[in-house]
Length: 507
Image (cartoon, rainbow, N blue to C red; front, side, top):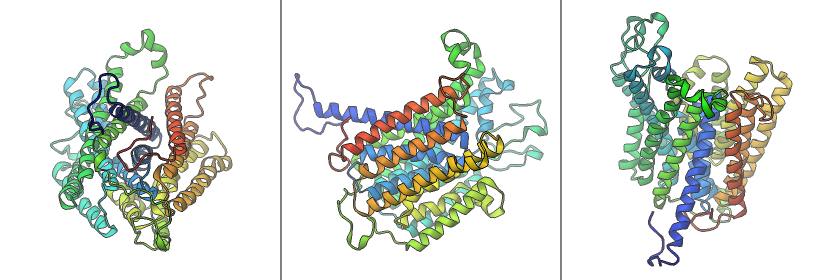
Protein backbone atom coordinates (compact mmCIF):
# COMPACT_ATOMS: atom_id res chain seq x y z
CA UNK A 1 0.00 0.00 0.00
CA UNK A 2 1.24 3.50 -0.77
CA UNK A 3 1.76 5.78 2.23
CA UNK A 4 -0.42 8.84 2.51
CA UNK A 5 2.45 11.10 3.54
CA UNK A 6 4.58 12.77 0.88
CA UNK A 7 7.52 13.03 3.30
CA UNK A 8 10.04 10.20 3.36
CA UNK A 9 10.12 8.16 6.55
CA UNK A 10 12.89 8.79 9.01
CA UNK A 11 15.02 5.93 10.33
CA UNK A 12 13.95 6.76 13.86
CA UNK A 13 10.18 6.77 13.44
CA UNK A 14 9.48 4.98 10.16
CA UNK A 15 6.29 5.70 8.27
CA UNK A 16 3.59 5.77 10.95
CA UNK A 17 0.89 6.49 8.39
CA UNK A 18 1.83 3.39 6.44
CA UNK A 19 1.98 1.36 9.63
CA UNK A 20 -1.51 2.44 10.69
CA UNK A 21 -2.85 1.68 7.25
CA UNK A 22 -1.36 -1.80 7.22
CA UNK A 23 -2.70 -2.49 10.71
CA UNK A 24 -6.15 -1.37 9.59
CA UNK A 25 -5.97 -3.55 6.46
CA UNK A 26 -4.93 -6.53 8.59
CA UNK A 27 -7.89 -6.16 10.96
CA UNK A 28 -10.33 -5.51 8.11
CA UNK A 29 -9.22 -8.66 6.30
CA UNK A 30 -9.28 -10.73 9.50
CA UNK A 31 -12.72 -9.51 10.58
CA UNK A 32 -14.14 -10.07 7.11
CA UNK A 33 -12.61 -13.56 7.05
CA UNK A 34 -14.21 -14.30 10.42
CA UNK A 35 -17.55 -13.01 9.15
CA UNK A 36 -17.25 -15.18 6.04
CA UNK A 37 -16.16 -18.25 7.99
CA UNK A 38 -18.95 -17.89 10.54
CA UNK A 39 -21.61 -17.03 7.94
CA UNK A 40 -20.66 -19.79 5.50
CA UNK A 41 -20.32 -22.30 8.32
CA UNK A 42 -23.81 -21.41 9.52
CA UNK A 43 -25.03 -21.66 5.94
CA UNK A 44 -24.16 -25.35 6.07
CA UNK A 45 -27.18 -25.97 8.28
CA UNK A 46 -29.60 -23.98 6.12
CA UNK A 47 -28.35 -24.40 2.56
CA UNK A 48 -29.06 -22.97 -0.86
CA UNK A 49 -29.50 -19.29 -1.74
CA UNK A 50 -31.16 -18.07 1.44
CA UNK A 51 -28.49 -19.71 3.60
CA UNK A 52 -25.63 -18.23 1.56
CA UNK A 53 -27.06 -14.75 2.11
CA UNK A 54 -26.04 -14.96 5.80
CA UNK A 55 -22.37 -14.87 4.87
CA UNK A 56 -22.95 -12.14 2.29
CA UNK A 57 -24.74 -10.04 4.90
CA UNK A 58 -22.01 -10.36 7.55
CA UNK A 59 -19.08 -9.78 5.18
CA UNK A 60 -20.57 -6.76 3.41
CA UNK A 61 -21.56 -5.11 6.69
CA UNK A 62 -18.04 -5.57 8.05
CA UNK A 63 -16.51 -4.03 4.93
CA UNK A 64 -18.78 -1.00 4.82
CA UNK A 65 -18.39 -0.32 8.54
CA UNK A 66 -14.60 -0.65 8.32
CA UNK A 67 -13.89 1.07 5.01
CA UNK A 68 -16.76 3.54 4.61
CA UNK A 69 -17.55 4.67 8.17
CA UNK A 70 -18.51 8.24 7.25
CA UNK A 71 -20.44 7.40 4.11
CA UNK A 72 -24.16 7.96 3.97
CA UNK A 73 -25.80 5.09 5.86
CA UNK A 74 -28.56 4.54 3.30
CA UNK A 75 -26.12 4.18 0.41
CA UNK A 76 -23.92 1.90 2.52
CA UNK A 77 -26.96 -0.25 3.28
CA UNK A 78 -27.81 -0.41 -0.40
CA UNK A 79 -24.32 -1.70 -1.21
CA UNK A 80 -24.57 -4.31 1.55
CA UNK A 81 -28.01 -5.38 0.35
CA UNK A 82 -26.82 -5.91 -3.22
CA UNK A 83 -23.81 -7.88 -2.02
CA UNK A 84 -26.02 -10.01 0.21
CA UNK A 85 -28.46 -10.83 -2.57
CA UNK A 86 -25.69 -11.61 -5.05
CA UNK A 87 -23.90 -14.09 -2.78
CA UNK A 88 -27.09 -16.11 -2.83
CA UNK A 89 -27.13 -16.43 -6.63
CA UNK A 90 -24.60 -19.28 -6.67
CA UNK A 91 -26.73 -21.31 -4.30
CA UNK A 92 -28.53 -22.92 -7.23
CA UNK A 93 -25.40 -24.91 -8.15
CA UNK A 94 -25.09 -28.55 -7.14
CA UNK A 95 -21.76 -29.52 -5.59
CA UNK A 96 -22.30 -32.53 -3.33
CA UNK A 97 -21.29 -35.03 -6.03
CA UNK A 98 -18.37 -32.80 -7.02
CA UNK A 99 -17.03 -33.12 -3.49
CA UNK A 100 -17.72 -36.84 -3.69
CA UNK A 101 -15.16 -37.14 -6.49
CA UNK A 102 -12.50 -36.18 -3.97
CA UNK A 103 -13.55 -38.21 -0.94
CA UNK A 104 -16.01 -41.03 -1.61
CA UNK A 105 -14.68 -44.49 -0.82
CA UNK A 106 -14.65 -45.85 -4.43
CA UNK A 107 -12.36 -43.02 -5.60
CA UNK A 108 -9.97 -42.90 -2.65
CA UNK A 109 -6.52 -43.22 -4.23
CA UNK A 110 -7.73 -42.02 -7.64
CA UNK A 111 -5.66 -38.87 -8.17
CA UNK A 112 -7.39 -38.03 -11.45
CA UNK A 113 -10.80 -37.97 -9.74
CA UNK A 114 -9.34 -35.87 -6.90
CA UNK A 115 -7.88 -33.31 -9.31
CA UNK A 116 -11.09 -33.16 -11.36
CA UNK A 117 -13.23 -32.71 -8.26
CA UNK A 118 -11.03 -29.92 -6.94
CA UNK A 119 -11.11 -28.22 -10.34
CA UNK A 120 -14.90 -28.43 -10.20
CA UNK A 121 -14.97 -26.74 -6.80
CA UNK A 122 -12.77 -23.95 -8.15
CA UNK A 123 -15.03 -23.43 -11.17
CA UNK A 124 -18.20 -23.38 -9.07
CA UNK A 125 -16.72 -21.41 -6.18
CA UNK A 126 -15.36 -18.73 -8.50
CA UNK A 127 -18.73 -18.11 -10.12
CA UNK A 128 -20.48 -18.17 -6.73
CA UNK A 129 -18.44 -15.47 -5.03
CA UNK A 130 -17.83 -13.53 -8.25
CA UNK A 131 -21.46 -12.35 -8.21
CA UNK A 132 -21.06 -11.11 -4.64
CA UNK A 133 -17.93 -9.12 -5.45
CA UNK A 134 -19.54 -7.64 -8.56
CA UNK A 135 -22.68 -6.34 -6.87
CA UNK A 136 -20.83 -5.10 -3.79
CA UNK A 137 -18.58 -3.10 -6.11
CA UNK A 138 -21.64 -1.76 -7.95
CA UNK A 139 -22.95 -0.45 -4.64
CA UNK A 140 -19.68 1.22 -3.64
CA UNK A 141 -18.30 2.50 -6.94
CA UNK A 142 -20.34 5.70 -7.21
CA UNK A 143 -22.10 4.76 -10.47
CA UNK A 144 -25.87 5.27 -10.34
CA UNK A 145 -27.80 2.19 -11.45
CA UNK A 146 -31.44 2.91 -12.10
CA UNK A 147 -34.09 0.27 -11.40
CA UNK A 148 -35.18 -0.06 -15.02
CA UNK A 149 -31.67 -0.72 -16.32
CA UNK A 150 -31.05 -3.22 -13.53
CA UNK A 151 -34.26 -5.01 -14.47
CA UNK A 152 -33.13 -5.23 -18.09
CA UNK A 153 -29.61 -6.26 -17.05
CA UNK A 154 -30.85 -9.15 -14.88
CA UNK A 155 -33.24 -10.29 -17.60
CA UNK A 156 -30.36 -10.22 -20.10
CA UNK A 157 -28.21 -12.14 -17.62
CA UNK A 158 -31.01 -14.70 -17.30
CA UNK A 159 -30.92 -15.13 -21.06
CA UNK A 160 -27.15 -15.61 -20.92
CA UNK A 161 -27.68 -18.14 -18.14
CA UNK A 162 -29.88 -20.35 -20.31
CA UNK A 163 -27.47 -19.92 -23.23
CA UNK A 164 -24.56 -20.97 -21.02
CA UNK A 165 -26.44 -24.01 -19.71
CA UNK A 166 -27.17 -25.02 -23.32
CA UNK A 167 -23.56 -24.51 -24.41
CA UNK A 168 -21.68 -25.93 -21.42
CA UNK A 169 -24.10 -27.99 -19.33
CA UNK A 170 -25.86 -29.94 -22.07
CA UNK A 171 -26.75 -32.63 -23.02
CA UNK A 172 -28.22 -33.94 -19.79
CA UNK A 173 -29.91 -37.31 -20.18
CA UNK A 174 -28.78 -39.64 -17.35
CA UNK A 175 -31.13 -42.41 -18.46
CA UNK A 176 -29.22 -42.67 -21.75
CA UNK A 177 -25.90 -41.88 -20.02
CA UNK A 178 -25.54 -38.70 -22.09
CA UNK A 179 -23.86 -35.98 -20.04
CA UNK A 180 -22.02 -32.72 -20.84
CA UNK A 181 -18.45 -32.86 -22.12
CA UNK A 182 -17.28 -30.84 -19.11
CA UNK A 183 -19.04 -32.31 -16.11
CA UNK A 184 -18.05 -32.12 -12.43
CA UNK A 185 -20.59 -34.43 -10.79
CA UNK A 186 -20.71 -38.22 -10.53
CA UNK A 187 -20.35 -40.17 -13.79
CA UNK A 188 -19.85 -43.81 -14.70
CA UNK A 189 -16.30 -42.87 -15.68
CA UNK A 190 -15.44 -42.45 -12.00
CA UNK A 191 -17.89 -45.04 -10.64
CA UNK A 192 -17.99 -47.79 -13.29
CA UNK A 193 -19.62 -50.32 -10.95
CA UNK A 194 -22.66 -48.12 -10.38
CA UNK A 195 -25.97 -48.46 -12.15
CA UNK A 196 -29.06 -46.23 -12.36
CA UNK A 197 -28.70 -45.41 -8.66
CA UNK A 198 -25.78 -43.08 -9.50
CA UNK A 199 -28.21 -40.27 -10.45
CA UNK A 200 -25.85 -37.62 -11.91
CA UNK A 201 -26.97 -34.11 -11.00
CA UNK A 202 -27.97 -31.32 -13.35
CA UNK A 203 -25.22 -28.67 -13.39
CA UNK A 204 -25.71 -24.98 -14.17
CA UNK A 205 -22.24 -23.53 -13.54
CA UNK A 206 -21.81 -22.73 -17.24
CA UNK A 207 -24.93 -20.60 -17.24
CA UNK A 208 -23.86 -18.71 -14.14
CA UNK A 209 -20.39 -18.10 -15.53
CA UNK A 210 -21.77 -16.67 -18.80
CA UNK A 211 -24.23 -14.48 -16.86
CA UNK A 212 -21.43 -13.25 -14.58
CA UNK A 213 -19.14 -12.42 -17.50
CA UNK A 214 -21.95 -10.60 -19.29
CA UNK A 215 -22.79 -8.49 -16.24
CA UNK A 216 -19.11 -7.74 -15.56
CA UNK A 217 -18.60 -6.57 -19.16
CA UNK A 218 -21.69 -4.39 -18.93
CA UNK A 219 -20.66 -2.64 -15.71
CA UNK A 220 -16.99 -2.38 -16.75
CA UNK A 221 -17.32 -1.24 -20.35
CA UNK A 222 -20.89 -0.05 -20.61
CA UNK A 223 -21.15 1.81 -17.30
CA UNK A 224 -17.43 2.51 -16.70
CA UNK A 225 -17.70 1.15 -13.16
CA UNK A 226 -14.02 0.62 -12.35
CA UNK A 227 -14.62 -0.84 -8.91
CA UNK A 228 -17.37 -3.35 -9.76
CA UNK A 229 -15.53 -5.44 -12.34
CA UNK A 230 -12.37 -5.45 -10.24
CA UNK A 231 -14.30 -6.70 -7.23
CA UNK A 232 -15.88 -9.37 -9.42
CA UNK A 233 -12.35 -10.64 -10.14
CA UNK A 234 -11.49 -10.63 -6.44
CA UNK A 235 -14.70 -12.52 -5.73
CA UNK A 236 -13.81 -15.10 -8.39
CA UNK A 237 -10.35 -15.44 -6.83
CA UNK A 238 -11.80 -15.86 -3.34
CA UNK A 239 -14.26 -18.52 -4.44
CA UNK A 240 -11.84 -20.36 -6.72
CA UNK A 241 -9.27 -20.63 -3.92
CA UNK A 242 -11.54 -20.95 -0.90
CA UNK A 243 -13.69 -23.86 -2.07
CA UNK A 244 -10.78 -26.16 -3.08
CA UNK A 245 -8.76 -25.26 0.02
CA UNK A 246 -11.67 -26.09 2.28
CA UNK A 247 -12.30 -29.35 0.45
CA UNK A 248 -8.61 -30.29 0.65
CA UNK A 249 -9.05 -30.56 4.43
CA UNK A 250 -12.06 -32.82 4.14
CA UNK A 251 -10.52 -34.92 1.37
CA UNK A 252 -7.26 -35.19 3.32
CA UNK A 253 -9.15 -36.70 6.23
CA UNK A 254 -10.97 -39.12 3.91
CA UNK A 255 -7.76 -40.21 2.21
CA UNK A 256 -5.54 -40.38 5.30
CA UNK A 257 -7.66 -40.61 8.47
CA UNK A 258 -4.62 -41.89 10.36
CA UNK A 259 -3.04 -38.44 10.06
CA UNK A 260 -5.83 -36.99 12.18
CA UNK A 261 -6.96 -39.88 14.35
CA UNK A 262 -3.64 -40.36 16.12
CA UNK A 263 -1.43 -38.11 18.18
CA UNK A 264 -2.32 -34.68 19.47
CA UNK A 265 -5.02 -34.12 16.81
CA UNK A 266 -7.00 -37.22 17.79
CA UNK A 267 -9.17 -35.63 20.56
CA UNK A 268 -10.24 -32.80 18.26
CA UNK A 269 -10.64 -34.97 15.16
CA UNK A 270 -13.05 -37.25 17.01
CA UNK A 271 -15.44 -34.33 17.52
CA UNK A 272 -14.98 -32.53 14.20
CA UNK A 273 -17.59 -32.18 11.48
CA UNK A 274 -15.34 -32.28 8.43
CA UNK A 275 -18.05 -31.11 6.04
CA UNK A 276 -18.71 -28.05 8.18
CA UNK A 277 -14.95 -27.48 8.42
CA UNK A 278 -14.81 -27.36 4.63
CA UNK A 279 -17.62 -24.81 4.55
CA UNK A 280 -16.12 -22.66 7.30
CA UNK A 281 -12.71 -22.65 5.60
CA UNK A 282 -14.32 -21.74 2.27
CA UNK A 283 -16.06 -18.76 3.85
CA UNK A 284 -12.98 -17.69 5.80
CA UNK A 285 -10.82 -17.61 2.66
CA UNK A 286 -13.25 -15.82 0.38
CA UNK A 287 -14.23 -13.33 3.08
CA UNK A 288 -10.59 -12.41 3.61
CA UNK A 289 -9.74 -12.16 -0.10
CA UNK A 290 -12.77 -10.00 -0.95
CA UNK A 291 -11.76 -7.70 1.92
CA UNK A 292 -8.17 -7.59 0.66
CA UNK A 293 -9.40 -6.69 -2.81
CA UNK A 294 -11.60 -3.89 -1.52
CA UNK A 295 -8.74 -2.54 0.61
CA UNK A 296 -6.47 -2.66 -2.44
CA UNK A 297 -8.98 -0.66 -4.52
CA UNK A 298 -10.35 1.53 -1.76
CA UNK A 299 -9.45 4.68 -3.68
CA UNK A 300 -12.24 3.69 -6.10
CA UNK A 301 -14.90 3.69 -3.38
CA UNK A 302 -17.09 6.68 -4.15
CA UNK A 303 -19.87 6.71 -1.57
CA UNK A 304 -20.87 10.27 -0.66
CA UNK A 305 -20.25 11.30 2.93
CA UNK A 306 -23.21 11.57 5.27
CA UNK A 307 -24.82 15.01 5.32
CA UNK A 308 -25.96 14.85 8.94
CA UNK A 309 -29.41 16.19 8.05
CA UNK A 310 -32.55 14.92 6.37
CA UNK A 311 -32.78 15.73 2.65
CA UNK A 312 -35.46 18.15 1.56
CA UNK A 313 -38.82 16.45 1.36
CA UNK A 314 -37.73 13.61 3.62
CA UNK A 315 -36.45 11.46 0.75
CA UNK A 316 -33.58 9.11 1.41
CA UNK A 317 -30.28 9.69 -0.40
CA UNK A 318 -30.01 8.25 -3.88
CA UNK A 319 -33.47 9.54 -4.83
CA UNK A 320 -35.55 6.34 -4.48
CA UNK A 321 -38.01 6.15 -7.33
CA UNK A 322 -40.70 3.79 -6.05
CA UNK A 323 -43.69 4.77 -3.90
CA UNK A 324 -43.77 3.00 -0.55
CA UNK A 325 -46.90 1.11 -1.59
CA UNK A 326 -44.98 -0.66 -4.34
CA UNK A 327 -42.21 -1.54 -1.91
CA UNK A 328 -44.66 -3.39 0.34
CA UNK A 329 -46.22 -5.16 -2.64
CA UNK A 330 -42.78 -6.36 -3.78
CA UNK A 331 -42.04 -7.46 -0.22
CA UNK A 332 -45.27 -9.45 0.02
CA UNK A 333 -44.72 -11.14 -3.35
CA UNK A 334 -41.10 -12.02 -2.68
CA UNK A 335 -41.62 -13.33 0.85
CA UNK A 336 -44.68 -15.33 -0.15
CA UNK A 337 -42.82 -17.07 -2.95
CA UNK A 338 -39.75 -17.70 -0.79
CA UNK A 339 -41.66 -19.05 2.21
CA UNK A 340 -43.86 -21.29 0.07
CA UNK A 341 -40.82 -22.42 -1.91
CA UNK A 342 -38.86 -23.26 1.23
CA UNK A 343 -41.60 -25.02 3.20
CA UNK A 344 -44.19 -26.24 0.69
CA UNK A 345 -44.59 -26.87 -3.02
CA UNK A 346 -46.27 -24.72 -5.65
CA UNK A 347 -45.15 -24.59 -9.24
CA UNK A 348 -44.84 -20.80 -9.21
CA UNK A 349 -42.68 -20.73 -6.06
CA UNK A 350 -40.70 -23.74 -7.29
CA UNK A 351 -39.89 -21.88 -10.51
CA UNK A 352 -39.01 -18.77 -8.50
CA UNK A 353 -36.63 -20.69 -6.23
CA UNK A 354 -35.08 -22.99 -8.83
CA UNK A 355 -33.44 -20.21 -10.83
CA UNK A 356 -31.39 -17.98 -8.58
CA UNK A 357 -31.27 -15.06 -11.00
CA UNK A 358 -35.08 -15.05 -10.94
CA UNK A 359 -34.99 -15.17 -7.14
CA UNK A 360 -32.63 -12.16 -7.11
CA UNK A 361 -34.62 -10.08 -9.61
CA UNK A 362 -37.20 -8.46 -7.30
CA UNK A 363 -34.73 -7.75 -4.46
CA UNK A 364 -32.05 -6.20 -6.70
CA UNK A 365 -34.53 -3.89 -8.43
CA UNK A 366 -36.41 -3.10 -5.22
CA UNK A 367 -33.21 -2.18 -3.37
CA UNK A 368 -32.36 0.23 -6.18
CA UNK A 369 -35.86 1.72 -6.31
CA UNK A 370 -36.97 1.96 -2.70
CA UNK A 371 -36.06 3.67 0.54
CA UNK A 372 -37.22 0.76 2.72
CA UNK A 373 -35.93 -2.20 0.78
CA UNK A 374 -32.20 -1.94 1.63
CA UNK A 375 -33.07 -2.20 5.32
CA UNK A 376 -35.76 -4.81 4.75
CA UNK A 377 -33.32 -6.99 2.83
CA UNK A 378 -30.58 -6.74 5.45
CA UNK A 379 -32.90 -7.59 8.32
CA UNK A 380 -36.29 -9.39 7.99
CA UNK A 381 -36.01 -10.65 4.40
CA UNK A 382 -32.75 -12.50 5.09
CA UNK A 383 -33.85 -13.68 8.55
CA UNK A 384 -37.30 -15.11 7.84
CA UNK A 385 -36.23 -18.26 5.90
CA UNK A 386 -33.52 -19.01 8.48
CA UNK A 387 -35.89 -18.61 11.42
CA UNK A 388 -38.41 -20.81 9.65
CA UNK A 389 -35.89 -23.57 8.96
CA UNK A 390 -34.75 -23.48 12.58
CA UNK A 391 -38.34 -23.85 13.75
CA UNK A 392 -39.01 -26.67 11.30
CA UNK A 393 -35.91 -28.61 12.38
CA UNK A 394 -36.39 -28.27 16.13
CA UNK A 395 -40.16 -28.24 16.54
CA UNK A 396 -41.45 -30.43 13.70
CA UNK A 397 -38.69 -32.63 12.26
CA UNK A 398 -37.10 -33.59 15.58
CA UNK A 399 -39.53 -32.48 18.34
CA UNK A 400 -36.77 -30.88 20.40
CA UNK A 401 -39.15 -28.11 21.47
CA UNK A 402 -42.91 -27.68 21.34
CA UNK A 403 -44.27 -25.89 18.26
CA UNK A 404 -45.65 -23.04 20.36
CA UNK A 405 -42.38 -22.46 22.22
CA UNK A 406 -40.48 -22.81 18.95
CA UNK A 407 -42.59 -20.15 17.26
CA UNK A 408 -42.02 -17.78 20.19
CA UNK A 409 -38.28 -18.33 20.59
CA UNK A 410 -37.15 -18.87 17.00
CA UNK A 411 -39.58 -16.75 14.99
CA UNK A 412 -41.48 -14.14 17.01
CA UNK A 413 -38.63 -12.86 19.18
CA UNK A 414 -35.97 -12.60 16.41
CA UNK A 415 -38.46 -10.99 14.03
CA UNK A 416 -39.54 -8.48 16.67
CA UNK A 417 -35.96 -7.37 17.12
CA UNK A 418 -35.17 -7.11 13.42
CA UNK A 419 -38.42 -5.30 12.58
CA UNK A 420 -37.70 -2.76 15.30
CA UNK A 421 -34.14 -2.43 13.98
CA UNK A 422 -35.49 -1.95 10.45
CA UNK A 423 -37.67 0.95 11.53
CA UNK A 424 -34.81 2.53 13.52
CA UNK A 425 -32.23 2.10 10.76
CA UNK A 426 -34.54 3.44 8.05
CA UNK A 427 -35.31 6.47 10.20
CA UNK A 428 -31.61 7.09 10.79
CA UNK A 429 -30.90 6.65 7.10
CA UNK A 430 -33.42 9.32 6.17
CA UNK A 431 -31.65 11.73 8.52
CA UNK A 432 -28.31 11.51 6.72
CA UNK A 433 -26.58 9.54 9.47
CA UNK A 434 -23.11 8.09 8.99
CA UNK A 435 -22.76 4.45 8.00
CA UNK A 436 -20.76 3.36 11.04
CA UNK A 437 -23.36 4.75 13.43
CA UNK A 438 -26.21 2.78 11.83
CA UNK A 439 -24.64 -0.30 10.26
CA UNK A 440 -22.44 -1.22 13.23
CA UNK A 441 -25.50 -1.85 15.47
CA UNK A 442 -27.16 -3.71 12.59
CA UNK A 443 -24.08 -5.92 12.26
CA UNK A 444 -24.08 -6.54 16.01
CA UNK A 445 -27.75 -7.57 15.95
CA UNK A 446 -27.55 -9.92 12.98
CA UNK A 447 -24.30 -11.50 14.20
CA UNK A 448 -25.92 -12.68 17.41
CA UNK A 449 -29.27 -13.45 15.79
CA UNK A 450 -27.71 -15.94 13.37
CA UNK A 451 -25.30 -17.27 15.97
CA UNK A 452 -28.24 -17.88 18.32
CA UNK A 453 -30.43 -19.57 15.72
CA UNK A 454 -27.56 -21.77 14.59
CA UNK A 455 -26.66 -22.59 18.21
CA UNK A 456 -30.20 -23.80 18.69
CA UNK A 457 -29.97 -25.76 15.43
CA UNK A 458 -26.80 -27.35 16.88
CA UNK A 459 -28.89 -28.48 19.91
CA UNK A 460 -27.08 -26.09 22.28
CA UNK A 461 -23.61 -27.72 22.39
CA UNK A 462 -22.36 -26.04 25.58
CA UNK A 463 -18.61 -26.65 25.97
CA UNK A 464 -18.96 -27.89 29.57
CA UNK A 465 -21.26 -30.69 28.40
CA UNK A 466 -20.01 -33.84 26.59
CA UNK A 467 -18.66 -32.73 23.25
CA UNK A 468 -20.39 -33.60 19.98
CA UNK A 469 -19.36 -32.93 16.38
CA UNK A 470 -21.13 -29.55 16.74
CA UNK A 471 -19.08 -28.27 19.68
CA UNK A 472 -15.83 -27.18 17.94
CA UNK A 473 -17.67 -25.13 15.34
CA UNK A 474 -19.99 -23.63 17.92
CA UNK A 475 -16.91 -22.43 19.82
CA UNK A 476 -15.34 -21.01 16.66
CA UNK A 477 -18.55 -19.20 15.72
CA UNK A 478 -18.72 -17.79 19.24
CA UNK A 479 -15.15 -16.49 18.92
CA UNK A 480 -16.02 -14.86 15.59
CA UNK A 481 -19.19 -13.33 17.05
CA UNK A 482 -17.26 -11.85 19.98
CA UNK A 483 -14.59 -10.35 17.69
CA UNK A 484 -17.22 -8.88 15.38
CA UNK A 485 -19.06 -7.48 18.41
CA UNK A 486 -15.95 -5.73 19.70
CA UNK A 487 -15.40 -4.22 16.25
CA UNK A 488 -19.03 -3.06 16.13
CA UNK A 489 -18.87 -1.41 19.54
CA UNK A 490 -15.61 0.35 18.70
CA UNK A 491 -16.96 1.58 15.38
CA UNK A 492 -20.15 2.89 16.96
CA UNK A 493 -18.36 4.53 19.90
CA UNK A 494 -15.84 6.18 17.60
CA UNK A 495 -18.71 7.93 15.77
CA UNK A 496 -16.91 7.03 12.54
CA UNK A 497 -13.82 9.28 12.73
CA UNK A 498 -12.06 10.35 9.57
CA UNK A 499 -13.60 11.29 6.25
CA UNK A 500 -14.49 9.42 3.12
CA UNK A 501 -13.08 6.03 2.21
CA UNK A 502 -9.39 6.91 2.58
CA UNK A 503 -9.34 7.08 6.37
CA UNK A 504 -9.52 4.16 8.74
CA UNK A 505 -11.14 3.49 12.05
CA UNK A 506 -8.03 3.06 14.16
CA UNK A 507 -7.56 -0.51 15.23
